[in-house]
Length: 323
Image (cartoon, rainbow, N blue to C red):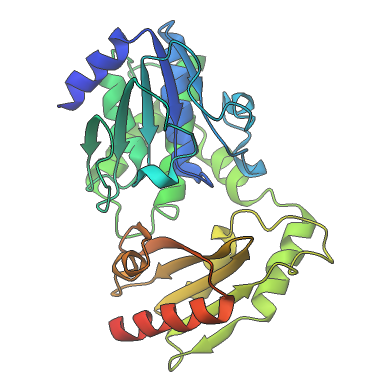
């Protein structure tokens, strides 16, 4: 199905649920809120499904107060659920097992399982928001002149693009990325406000937590890999939740000679691992060995019923093969 046909299908639906992947990042949240605000502006009956709540740095986005973590499955009379920025059904932040309506899967991950009744995957998009931008155009949303509603929608999409491109420094950035960003800037989107809200708005306790994580960082495999380990007791003395680790893992790639950063986080039922690469290692390939996925330079893994030491050994063994 073409994106134009998907736009028509959504507009003809009576009740629309919108969701994303678990532990939603900026692209997931920005894309969902852009679509939500756009559909609301068209007087469509829509709502957000989310098992998760939002990190503080994304709560400046219009509609973020709709994401409470309380609506975890489609409500009665929902025709369609649109899943954005999620590569497989197991990672959807919603319980869709009993849902008998249509699932529309829109994503930019090459490793997407195409689990929807309707699937639209554009792996050339730097962020799912680039696809959403095109989708909204096809729905009749005009980005030619500034007004408060359009600016709010644009702010959501610009946030997505900034976060999934590493503020435009990753290799996924294309001419289309800059073209869409230019259109959003022209309608009044405040890039400085977005950047400050995302990156320059941390609590002092968060900075101390980052410092603690970095103080135990190790350089291994001839200095090509930066390793960060966060166990269950890591935040006990600071009294805060570790939350999203993207701001921590990014420091590893700032080290001269480091090609891959691996962050391991102990969770109740196993280990979560985040992988980032600087220039030539395909960390998605490594993640897929363990049932994870993501992008060539940024991927994630969840390994159940395994200790930190076991996960570290197994993942580092795969990284070593790629170096």
